[in-house]
Length: 79
Image (cartoon, rainbow, N blue to C red; front, side, top):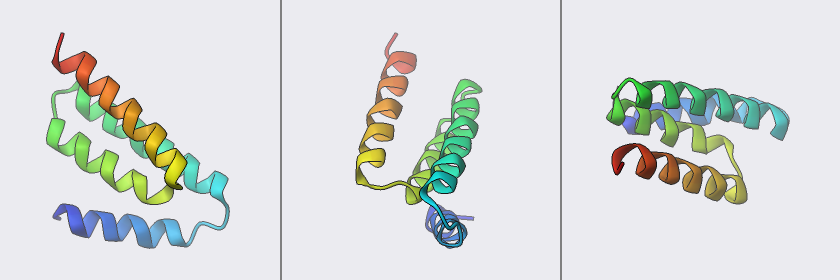
């Protein structure tokens, strides 16, 4: 599936979660999956997963994860 479809599926799933804690837990698990893909050199797939997990986050959380992802990416790619 393309990224737009993945984001829509994620948004549909997240919209059914009733509390922010559940949303953040789901986003964290997605991020961990993205981290594993990144470690395996699957950069495009990892970025897709990182992007889809952001649908569960509020603006502050999005920014925190975005900067964390960017720092992770910079440290691994630009060693």
